[in-house]
Amino acid sequence: MAGSGVFAEIRDGDGVFRYYSDGEWKASASGKSVPIINPTTRSTHFKVQACTQEEVNKIIESAKAAQKLWAKTPLWKRAELLHRAAAILKEHKAPIAECLVKEIAKPAKDAVTEVVRSGDLISYCAEEGVRILGEGKFLVSDSFPGNERTKYCLTSKIPLGVVLAIPPFNYPVNLAVSKIAPALIAGNSIVLKPPTQGAVAALHMVHCFHLAGFPRGLISCVTGKGSEIGDFLTMHPGISCISFTGGDTGVAISKKAGMIPLQMELGGKDACIILEDADVDLAAANVVKGGFSYSGQRCTAVKVVLVMESVADKLVEKVNAKVQKLTVGAPEDDCDITPVVTESSANFIEGLVMDAKQKGATFCQEYRREGNLIWPLLLDHVQPDMRIAWEEPFGPVLPVIRINSVEEGIHHCNASNFGLQGCVFTRDINKAILISDAMETGTVQINSAPARGPDHFPFQGLKDSGIGSQGITNSISMMTKIKTTVINLPAPSYTMG
Ligand code: NAP
Image: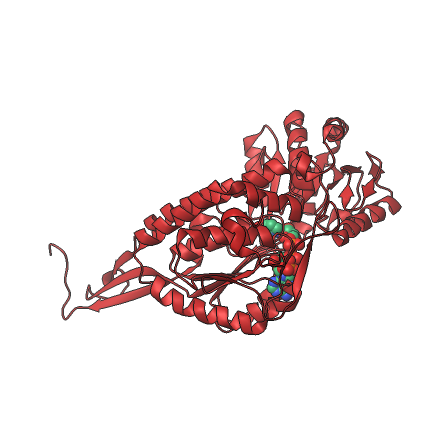
């Protein structure tokens, strides 16, 4: 059970979850807590500490000191500790998954998958780090015009310092470790600010790193509302790098942050382009999986279907048949569609639906909502003047726009402010490549729905969808700097010369 057994020390006597600083679980001096509302019951399920600015200062001071020692820790030892944390995380998947069910209404099986996937990510990161950080470059000067071979240049990757990690609610464990593990293997320390919904799952995950025996202060976790402590954290002079995943907040952070490397993984409006020659069964299955998994609350969910008019009726019919079979209800029952994360999210989704209704979209199902639970809805004949054609609902509502040419589909995709992923369904690989090249998105999937994984694939958004690239190798590289040492010889020296 959450907060019991090996996790007992992360909760205080009043049941409020503690924050993690300098290797210890602590109650905030603020005396205040932040409630975490269960999206299903809509009542307070957990509480976390509302940390103060002084506590943040203390955490960042400890992180700076711990990082200096950690950078001197051999790479193989860093990897060994990461492997240990991964094993402990997987061993305790059940209570962590339980938190995900209660905090973010993630279907029970998916919650377990998230924790296991996170353990695998940590281990892969340890292995990849040992490989890529164990290698540098050797350059000689005479390849540049005008130079003799008098200079030998040695390059290596060095840590940045203190990395601030801010993940979103939808994968609070996986998107936290996708920042923590690369930062640590590269020799950085880490300050985690988990999303409020998902904070308790994240605190349990952090405790697995504590149990693995990482040095004091190297990892810390500060809780509280992003709107209250977020700016103080992101603008703090002690932070050397920010890795953020979330919505528009990331755009604001990018404008406020100092001269430090930023990794921003933001929103998306992933388009699914379906051509006349597509395997319509395959496309329909992917539209439903891509559009409705975790109730559409995924950055890479299919968020608009652009289907050629000639196959649109067939596609809509097949999608509707599958939507009918989706189970709707509690995450504990492992339903396909569960309540969306907050009441304000549900209200936002409803606003998009009502706008589409008013402007004449065809409702393939009746719109139904109870509390935060919204029944899956396919909206056909969506037009470009409807908000849902452009905005990210982050809910189980999917617009279909009928197109008359491939160019029309590409134009709609590229007119979006977002550019995360996209997908195209066709049996013609040549067409698929041409469309992929024309789509202004970080990734295009051919004959499959967009997806962030496997976690070692590069993952990046163009335009408002982000800065930099994720994926294990890219994240490790992003959390390092290149350092060079140049050996100057008294005379040109040529091997075997
Ligand atoms: P969000 O509202 O932007 O919040 C993300 C994180 O930022 C949370 O931890 C939040 O903390 C924190 N935060 C809020 N205000 C802050 C501030 N002023 N300074 C610093 N941090 C602050 O996003 P969300 O609702 O959790 O997640 C949904 C969004 O994430 C969607 O747009 C989705 O597309 C995107 N997403 C993108 C990816 C990707 O890889 N591209 C992956 C998953 C999700 P609190 O919870 O305490 O407010």
